[in-house]
Length: 524
Image (cartoon, rainbow, N blue to C red):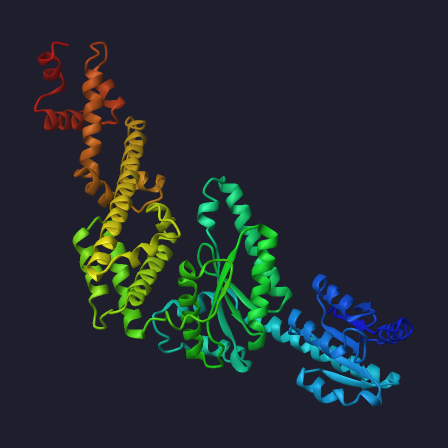
């Protein structure tokens, strides 16, 4: 373990003497020890380098040791501070305790007292590192997946035993959930190559992970697309400052912005689920509050539980209807949302509902590599049009038109993709008509199951794959029969038939005549 120590004293001679005594300690001999002659210099060093332990004189000019300690805790809430002072300054002890100081040494400091304190701090910091490492190990990828799945359930429900087992120690001192979203990332990477996108996403992920690790913020989990879920265990009073530091540092690094929604701090497992929902609610109102910021209090926008459950289910049903261009079901879902058990009487309630609907649709579509706002070409000011309407009916009519448009665009895009697939399958089969071709072979080539491809093919062409294959072979045969120099058995082989008897039977079944009769009829 390499511990980083910062020594602060405005007296250069005293500072050097302290440094030599500190580095002579066995636990510290191979550690990183830096010095600063003022609180200002020490804070600059903390901005540039991680610090685990500070030994600071309590009486310094301009910026006192107490003032420096407050600012140092703002930069790194996890840092340990040991104050050094004379007997006349012992009145500071009470204030030091309020600052959660880790220790207090009186001048002149005896070597034994100093070394005992260093040993104590080394062991304490080492134990904290082990706990953080244990937290990281506990939240393995499997546990992270389980936790994310539990977060995404509509209600906390019954917490599974193994989930309870690894969350319980984490929550002993309290924790909160924060959701981090990279703003407008889908639009910004639209013109990039696949490799450029991959490198950018990897760079963003690495930066956020390293920041979380350096500041000991907790455990970061990649959720979906441009979202990260942070389970933070730092002290509640420091969460806001540390997340705002992340937002600022991210923008300086990338010239992109991130928005973070947070939930409430808790030590109860079921309330941790609520914390995730609160973070979601906070992030969902980014459209209103703006981006590149921390959104903590979304209480005015938080849906009632019954309404939230109904919304989740209804929006899922509406999205499926959009993909199938089922306008009637889309309309039914909108009516369900607006005319539920809890009538919406205020414009703000209507606006809140629409924000939640569109946020949920946007998130679901992103998982399908679609972008709601890009498809509909919505600008950031678009929702404020809603406040120009005077009735719920007018608002509902506007939203109905937009969602019908969304459904049409999604449906047409899906149909074009299916048509393209059918064309590719046709070309693939045509190039292999002289070979044995099966649905299994074609499905394997296009990475589908035979059952799914067969159903898709039937739905799109109204023809079974086997009938389609026979039809292609017969068209090839008819083309080849136009060449009088070719023998019938040669034509059969070129069309993929190895058995001439079966070929003749199949040709007559398809055309009503034998190959010879076909040539006579067409005067070949």
